[in-house]
Image (tube, rainbow, N blue to C red; front, side):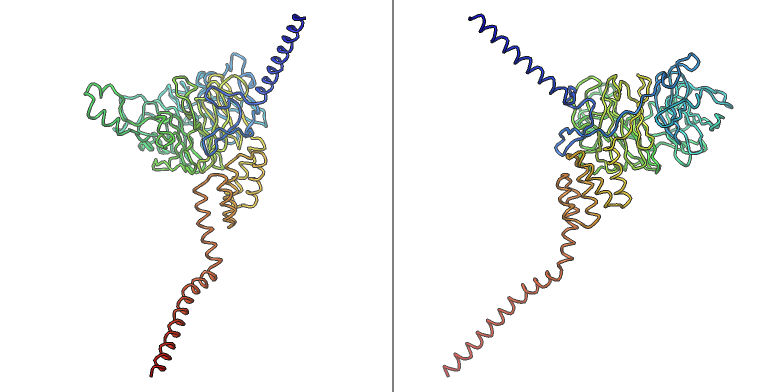
Length: 517
């Protein structure tokens, strides 16, 4: 009997354990997997006002992955893509710097199908007609192709028929250290034909060439951020030998650049102190005007720095976000590519985070060596140099609605913008930008009290203050007659009462004097 009860008790315990394991399994499979640093590894997310991580619907989904196999490059003649370094998109064509094979791939897109248009291995008319470790490529509106020919220490320009036009080489100028090799890694070309380059070991800013190939100086040098404590320690307490061995207080070189449709250059920087990020001293993303001044708008609580929380450590997947590339859409939304955790961060023209997604790994939509990003319309293309592939993302309904709502507002269609922002809230009730967007639309329609309510929900103090000032001004204008009347009553009634009392007193005194007589 005792053995039977014991057996029954063990069976019941086993059943309960199995039930608990089953429930736990269901729970774990119903929520996203989280990495060691506390963030979702593959789902889209944003941050709330208190810097807390907030899951959101996916703004993008994977369309396809382009690699050597999908492009039909498995034969020996074409070779597989090897260590590609950058992407460039112009007029529906995609250019890939296939550095390991010393060539440029020109791809054509037809819907979701990508094919090779041509393989650019050489040009005609140049004394050096091949490439050596090309790092970047750009194409101007006329179809001229520019290549950062790193191994040949030049930027080469050729026409659309691959005829050599000119080389941009090391400047023979006193401002350029003649002891350095000319090693261009990233380039952009503006509408006037001016070329801007990020060169290895050059920290004076972007190397600038005029359209005729003349070197015209440097622009946009990174600012040096030095704490007072470090300066005093180095200046007064270190010996000459220690100062010589310690790190110099010099600007750093940029990591990557992109030129938008208005001619402004977006530059990314990955060398900074972690503690300078949230105070906006690091400035990992900059928007440079023609004078090299940073004019990036930052109207959110924190500047655009990627993840707001991170763990410290020496591994590649810890620490703050470090942007290796950036692309800017026609609606002024810019997307920065983070090499630390393989994530994409989207920001609007005001510097407000729209969404973030991505991870490191070998699954679809993840990266092991994300190095370059481009866009085609709303679609995003991410180059992985370790996987030798390009992942193509397209917007979901949620992502498209966010873009359309922002664009309607910018074009002055405030009613339509408000409707779209309400649709966004139906898909994501915890999206502060939707409340902010509806607040802006309400403010443009002179509905200041309603705008204040929306800005309060978005924790947007700056816009709330603007709406309150306009609300107060509007209220005063609508009630000015009553205000004047009230002021008049406040001023006149006491005077009238005082005058009446004075008259009564005078009458009283007169009557009393009359009686006495």
